[in-house]
Image: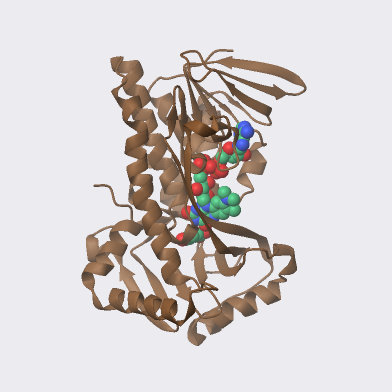
Length: 389
Ligand code: RFL
Ligand code: PHB
């Protein structure tokens, strides 16, 4: 088999890249180790920046998003009971869209099936060969048979645990990492959200987040210890802990029910440098991880592959290597800006076991400054909705 671009991974990064290349008339094959249903069963991000919304519209995969997505003008922050609303629209004239990663993924998968573009699911033992030269190859096993794809480029869109980054020799890559001493326990429930907008709450018992997927489906999170297990949390324990971290008037309004999904995500900041190795490119979670506090993971993945598609388009259209040469530097600039914001939101809102009284006073001062300064609020709004200089 031969293609121009072999895309490893059918998450948001791989599927978005596939769609962009298809639109540009560049041939690509997606190779995914799981089944499509498994990919769709993962409950992850919920908030799209305006630039992600615009891209999904340009790619023609916006019909359901525009019908079912919910536009939010702002978010609520709560700090030890004090509420502060950040009104993005009033502060900087921008908004965000609440539309789940599962739905974005489903829309992209459906569009790919409709167009007949090639995707291979349930491919095992995926390996990337010869990416230092001009004729890379990808091999994999499917239904007991080994296959090989010859290509011009390999796009590593296979997430944090994928094969792409792992294929790069240790001496060619640097990694920068911070692992936080906690995770988020998330619950999905078929009940209307407790509030119209998201509520990010700092509480001495730990962080909590009230989010949603629709007007009838809610997503809630509580900060838990890094070693805790989702199965040790009954629904009742979860709702009690969430209520304890919310203001009494909000806790009273909370509509609970049986969880339809419950899982723990560890929190981590991670960046690999560089992001190009000959003819192999890293994108999305394969390249970087942010803690979910700034709702950035999915949006970064979409940003990266937009840059990569532009670079590949330049290569095939104008025979210019300038775009692929600039890819790593350009994406890393956005990555570090977004890492900083996600780290900042995380340290503002979580309870850190070792921060001590000094750390807690600094956190409070940070929140009070935000409440008092329109410029600080604009900075949060600009970053949350997606800063593109
Ligand atoms: P993905 O979504 O992980 O997709 C990668 C795909 O590659 C496949 N794969 C392979 N395929 C072939 N060969 C191999 N060797 C392969 N190894 C892996 C995987 O099966 C998968 O289908 O990465 P992508 O596309 O870069 O997208 C990134 C986003 O998914 C991610 O940034 C966000 O979901 C992060 N994230 C969250 N972000 C938010 O903004 N808000 C959240 O609430 C939120 N919750 C989460 C998250 C990430 C999580 N992970 C990665 C464990 C919760 C979790 C649990
Ligand atoms: C979610 O709805 O899953 C969600 C929303 C905002 C975040 C993280 C997760 O910052």
